[in-house]
Length: 236
Image 1 (cartoon, rainbow, N blue to C red):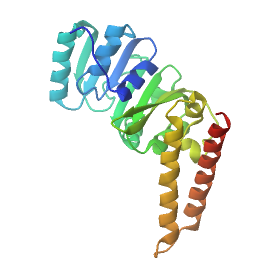
Image 2 (image 1 turned 90 degrees about the vertical axis):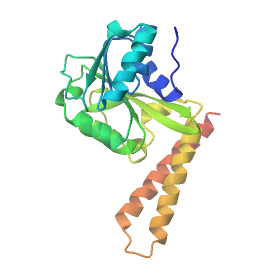
Image 3 (image 1 turned 180 degrees about the horizontal axis):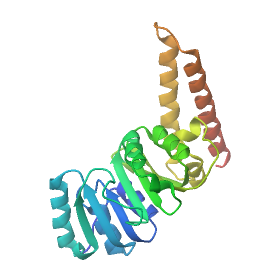
């Protein structure tokens, strides 16, 4: 077998890696992304880790099947405690909640030293992750969207460097994503406009004690998202 197929979500993450001599894939599962990177020449060496032994065994078998075992190091580990600052210049963390990714990154101060490229694909709570990146000296250089089984996912490329504090809406739709103008962006905006609208309606109609500050915050976010949507429509 000479080829390996990635889901659109994982393919977007792999492509954002660009070309790296050494890559670390955290939570590698079956090892598909490292194998793709090695076979495509995007990486020369990949450190793939997982917290469970079974996925690592699957990754080992897949690497043998695809002839990439010599360029792949498999490590049983949770998070990035097994990595040093010089272990890899690109680190991939995909398929986890945004708060989990932020917690993993918080355990290594060197991730924001300006020498590392972080490829992050949160399944949920992306705003928490984006806020953590800003507060820890990282900015989102690029962002992409990918659709799998009717769900749209965001993939972030973050690097060390200062940036202006993101607005409430930019914690959901970062400026780098707006700059990409991907075909999925309009639908992605609509999805979040609906979510914020529903949340706002629920807060306002609640029979319990209302939080005026939180309501005002959600109203600002909704207004910003609607402005973003209007900007897209003007470009058509």
